[in-house]
Length: 285
Ligand code: C5P
Image (cartoon, rainbow, N blue to C red):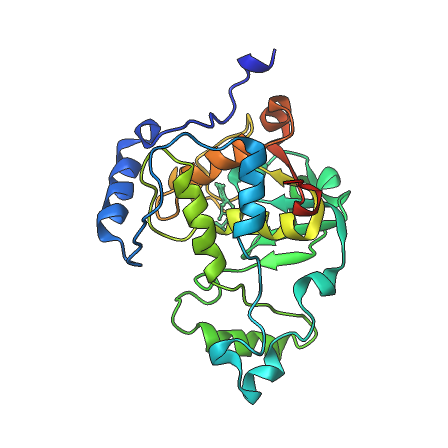
């Protein structure tokens, strides 16, 4: 009885948020710290899942900074930036897993299922040691935000170089920042309300990266399962509803979009927090 399962509603509105998070969203809207000027359509009906997949495929350029890009075209940066691009580095991937870091992964026993994929993407400092039963042990790609890596945004370039020196064999890519705004436009176009004028969450960016590299992408606990909790991460005790529902990031609207294009069953969201998305190679437009 699919209709009876309590899973993410793709028409979730900010009115469903707790008052504190409604306020935070409003504050970010009035702050508009990145001077987002949106001129596209608003409050129109959202696209069909098929059309939306085509828009994501054709309008969001998932690329990494390379040695010929503007400020990086110096001999110094050539030492650091990986020579092969990411898709050359990993090759064509079949079934991929994206593991959100949500608290609801705890006690999920999803480890073996996650490890059965050809590639696994994780985020920021999310550990596997000690959590293998729930999150698996394989990591192919790790998406790290500049905040996580030694706190502030501001020392990003120095920290990047330090990390590279510490792990010279790891190809360490810098995601082209244009991509997040291309994605932001599509999120806004397909939402009935104004979304936070801030970059999409790492989770959403990771999903886009894997849709670019893989034939099929299974996302775990981005749309919460029956284990939904206010515990922010499976590896910490910190509680905050914002981690699942969004505050800074337009996370609520990202989840609405992901639910809309999900090709898996509601039952799998309920039991595994699992969403199945096609890789862009498999999308016909
Ligand atoms: O917190 P962090 O950014 O490292 O988590 C990775 C991603 O997982 C987030 O950007 C978000 O998309 C997703 N997430 C979530 N619910 C949580 C925690 C994380 O959807 N409770």
